[in-house]
Image (cartoon, rainbow, N blue to C red; front, side):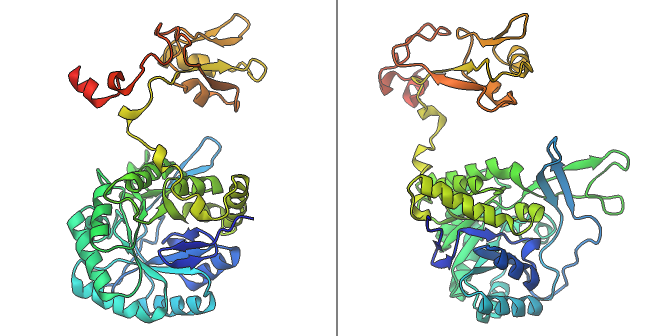
Length: 433
């Protein structure tokens, strides 16, 4: 079987699946249950400095978005960092690490943005024997209003400054957790690298309101008639997370900076996609909160079987494999032409493809009186909307036209753009036009 052992910035774990800093990692009981289930590591729920106590709401903390089958697609949470006493957390971290030496244990931290506060918290956690720290620069609610969390993560200069403080006052590897609530995620990643970060993790939750109660006219979750924005996570945020991971992995300024991928990881396939786009490991939260800790066992077996099928012997063989194939739109090959095709034997005659194409796309699907559907090549632009709306897997596929074939829609031969100097996607050609 493939070796899933992970060595992320010198932190070893038996597999690349870590639990993210969140309610599942708030105390010893949960973390030990996670380790017993097979998780390779955890990031302990964010600790703060001693001072005014953190008080969480005692009403609903989560809003949700479901699919048509009631499958949970996204959670919105308004929970703050840990509300348990700092000394209790530190004692439990110490006990867990001494018992589970082979597992990764990272401490998430969030304190006011001054050097003394960071120096103090780092001194307090020094003897826990934790493997590293993660700087929570991403939380978009509650703590951000106090000048922490995403209030720091949205200012690259602050990220660099605090990261330097942490590297100055701590022996531990430092992971900087980035907020997605920003225009260009590469800028905070560059700042973390300049500050000496050993790695970045992303994405933290997305600022959101998931729903409004139309009887009480308040955002949900609702606390005594009022609601607020919170942090959105779960399968729905995965596409956003993948793009941001890829942007950091392929940028010249941050290339080679280790990445811990977060955002909607629910299956082994999700994890493999993050790793192929440059993540050295992945962190999981919503899947564990939905299905329980044992969900990791399917992730482990699935990833191992996949790597075996590809002849990969270690996770290092997978990390970054897709990065060279991520490019900008202007470099896509206009000589590549496809057309949709419908398998009449698999078709259930629901008509979704016809309705979608006729009403909202390019009128490229014909319907006969007895509801047989076919593609009109002279109208098909290969947008593949029909593939995506079809409820039958592989009923509609895209076939590639060979070089030299005539595209009936445009009248030109496939491959007519013979070289890059005349290619419409060439930036210089576009500028000349």
